[in-house]
Image 1 (cartoon, rainbow, N blue to C red):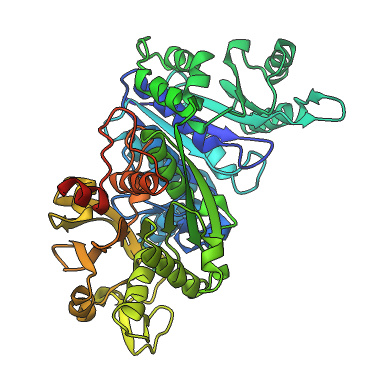
Image 2 (image 1 turned 45 degrees about the vertical axis):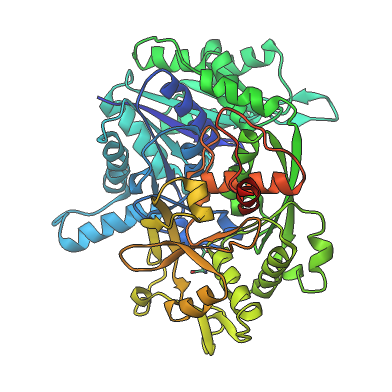
Length: 557
Ligand code: GLN
């Protein structure tokens, strides 16, 4: 029988509830428990797939093809939680299920209401997660306590505690202690009010975690304890971390959060094995021997969250290879043939990430041209593969009109075209090619050097693809389709053997990178960037031989 931890947030949004939930999951796993983490979001979109990256940040994709909140990326990076459609529900998806059932006659004779029908549906989302043979389910409630939208979720989790028993259900509330510079104090009042709001609904938090810029005195914690009706040993501090978000599990473990969770949930009081995590944080903190600068040239550059998993995956590879990864974020629209040499001068690697629509495309094409011609390590992801193919077709194969029908529907040379199965699709939500697909990798390619495997699985989110009609001419000019989907014959990876490191993938490898297990293509890319920067390969644990063409050829000589 699973135990349950609900995580709510108060005072302000963007407090880091997702990170805190992920860190708690990490700690419970360190005690040998099987943990599931999920997020319930109070907005009306059925999923975030239809929102602009500027609005919502990255859309994280699961193996089973759900388009989900980016907090799931934290869950993936900190834990081994099974991620699927059960990991993220929204007000929209919950109402959708209830309304569909109502139309089918599932509530015949009844008036369908928020309580109990919507709240029952919310509770069933938690129970379905737990049915996956888990010891603990951590459920993060999106939004901020006090918002109109959050109310049905809070009501549902209150009922959940009543029904399941208070020894199996815990409530963790995360708030902010604002620091007033003028008086030099931190204030607890907003936290008191936020807990008060929760109590109005009938939830007394068991644990309070406060975010703070500065560490606070014991008196402040005592005040929080007294006013919020929470024992002092259940009040935890989450001060802004010094170096990296990956310190968070250790910060919370030092204060005994894991022990308290175990005790309260009546789970065996075991010793946590955090050795791997401690070793990771030690490496992160230590000064790294080398630095590489990576240009990320995309269309949602202003918002860090829009490419969250990519930035994290670059950092993971940097940690492994003992390199500080410095980012040069470049707005694709600014890049032209004239500006490229200046904007990209001195970078050790260039990454073009995913995206939708025409804006910025020509800048990306010029970026790829620069990387290809100047021999700068290049990594294209999803849209990044599509522009790499367009660039190659235009400038190497001399097909000047090459383009994607996404950007030019009447294009004469559609080297990138809408996938056959997408042609009749009119609905926007959840209809892309989504989730995990198999990819067969050719031996003796850069892709194979990175993965060391011929059969892999990666996650997708796109409608357009390389048009196989042009494959022969692209190949004749030297582009190698090194990874192909065996069922549909779709090109999933392309590369240029004449280049030190040039690879582009149709899928999103960034979703599967973990700090303790960096993704092999990111590792290869940062390795190549290190060589470009003139640093000999060195690194943590794994062998750090860097899979670049150049390295291989030099070795052969
Ligand atoms: N817009 C492109 C497509 O739909 C690429 C999508 C992406 O980068 N995720 O195919």
